[in-house]
Amino acid sequence: MKTNNQVDVPIVLAGRYKIKPEKRERFLELAQAGVEPTRKESGNISYSFYEEAGVKNSFIYFEEWQSREALAEHLNQPYIIPLLKEFPEMVDGEADVRIYDIEAITYGL
Image (cartoon, rainbow, N blue to C red; front, side):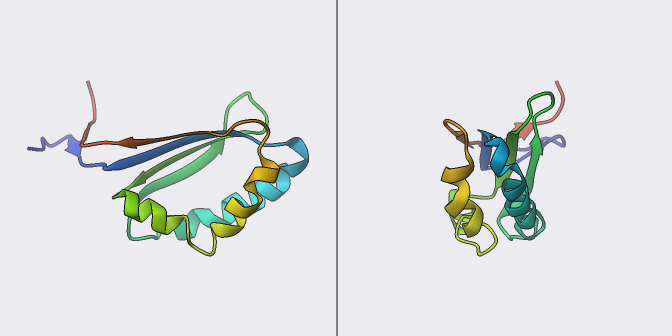
């Protein structure tokens, strides 16, 4: 049962990536190209990425999806494939990606 301040959010992806300085501009080009089309995908609830405050070239993705299937479909879109293809050459170190299966989220304390 949902209360007025509770919504269903089945999948959350949280990713943090350090990008090589020399790959920064290419990363931003590819990442920004996917933002608006991704937000229009039927299975997308929210999608954002930003540079971590005070940590140059460290980027954070925060995504909410209706299902794992919607996320998998997203990863096969023509505006995401170029980023995924070049990503291993752009990332500096290990990518920290976490996917959370969430039943519900409640806003407020």
